[in-house]
Image (cartoon, rainbow, N blue to C red; front, side):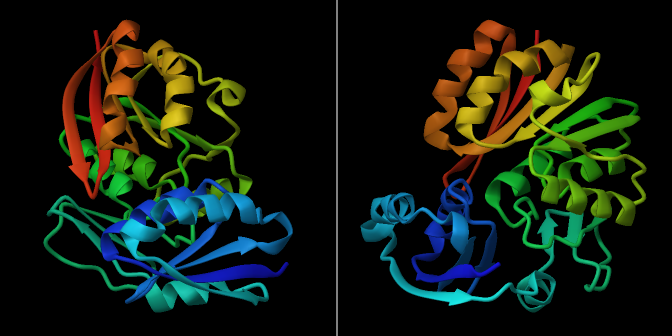
Length: 275
């Protein structure tokens, strides 16, 4: 399959926003460069009008210029080895690919082979979720990771002492990648495939993690409420700081109270507690 390649020059503070926006319209591969980002989409499913709408929204404030090309199927693993850097979340966790050496001075280490999957720790939402997880007692808890992607949050839950961790994603490619990463980190679970309504998790959980996007979160909050134990925690991210009020408007009538907010590069994360 051929891919369309767009080399986007933009202001640094807009890189993560553009990656998030483009990931929702069919782009599945991203590389950060010194001048901006390189993004890739399968040519057979590319919708130019939708792409141009996103770009036009940010073109002026982000000072965007674009060079377009077409490439044959890329060895994404090789590209990641050239461009993927480890991530340090305070002294809590060091996230590295298997081709990087270990690093001392961290409480935990996560090893992933990201294969261009969204949720590697580089994005502000994943970074914040990892940090907030480190502030919550996971010892002996039952944890559900909704839309798990690379599986990084589920792995973090395991490292923090969770007794049982479950995870799923709607993308079969993410499921395959996530299961590989679980094995790399000695987590003996298998990621499920489907939406939360299709997977139908059973019972209740001490902690539910959902790093997706605003529209999905709003649609699924009622389901999360049925799954979080009384006194349990719901961690949310994948939306902008300006979206917090909309989410809380739905979450509060479902019995959630806001415990903590977090912000990084205009992206937000929330810790909610079930009454």
